Image (tube, rainbow over all chains, first blue to last red; front, top):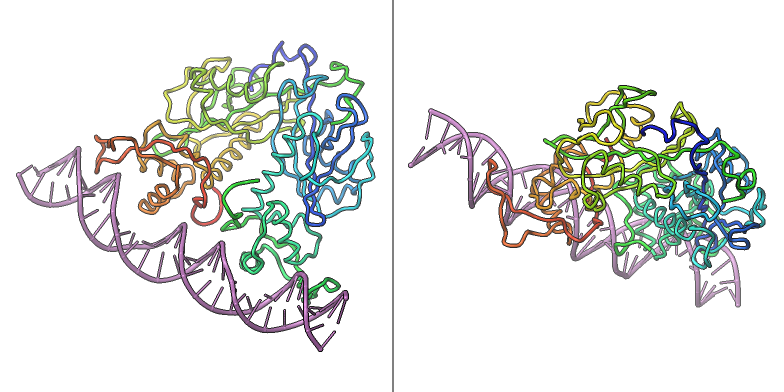
Length: 243
Length: 243
DNA sequence: CGCCTTTATAGTCAGAGTGACTATTAAGGA
DNA sequence: TCCTTAATAGTCACTCTGACTATAAAGGCG
């Protein structure tokens, strides 16, 4: 933090625009999905892109991210303000946007399976895409999305974040599927149970021990997210490295 | 990424300034030290602050961080370009700088024990401070510094980053002191050795098995940083949580 | 020159945690 | 009613770790 160029006159130097980009993930049908919007204007008209937008003069980047998320998903403000939003990193290559100098703060959001977005805001169209079968995205959004996937995969190892993908009440099988989907591996079911249940505060049984019936096999017990946020020791994914 | 306000005219809206702030850490004398500069102008004139500065119109934030680091430390460009620089996160509170809207991308750098900085650039003064005994810093730099300390402490657990604090050749005792200093705990020496030596690629013995003599006890074998970057399984700090 | 202190290095042992299993229970569907 | 599916219970060996003890090799100091 040193002296501003040109003695503080905010209009005397080439301005930067600051945006947020959101990698919104959900798990549906055993596949990782990501929310994308179709661009209605050049550049990259017709391409799909991460939702996002400009940070307004009087808001923080995180506020901007929550505002954009509410606009794109149609979720209520109160729902969005409770969601887990994680700042990923900031992308600042001078040529990442052909129009002007744009620095973008990327966030990752984890949401339970949601209805189709109504495509509000200025996006021409918005929908969930299978994160494993995507074409090229606009701008550097491929890179941002890959970084986001890496980050949440790593965070599942040492935090209780996986419950953010689940509805308020969930079975251990559903929680396990979150791990398997994000990591792209299969886990041993009894071992996964043992780990989750012996980690204090990871999950808590729903009072009255209700069970989810209607599925195919034996009804599963229901759990809620616990109070813990960190996993000690971590739940390491098999075979060393990331996807 | 949506339409720019006011139809792309870069001067038609309130501009953002984009800066970088650097938390440069080193270990000297068993204490964690951080590089600070004294501000020569208001606001916060006379206060100490993290080194940093404006991102220039044609450079990325990381380039700006390396440029500022070279200016503040007097290190050569080639040394700085080889250093480990890690993007921490971006601070975007609208009121974090009273002069104007400034969004700052924070980086953490880990360097071996260096000579006193020459205080180049526009900083009035620059020196190393014991990170455990600091007064209030300028702007939100207390917060950035605390976040940086947390991050590197966590990264020591699951990466081989600790070697970045060491000179090219180091003893296992010196490496252990890095962990103890950053985490603020004491580690069992034989257990630490075992962990480091059985992790493939963490360190490699210097050829010829030289030993560092001149110290007080038995001369220690010298090692270099190995090729590995990740630690599997991690080297978890004792007693769960962070400093 | 012999001790004492200091630091490096070697090794031991018990317990926690995990991976790879097998077995049993309880639902739905043909 | 049997078959399939999924949940749950439990076992066993192996790895890794924390807490130790023991030995080796330097410097300092009487």
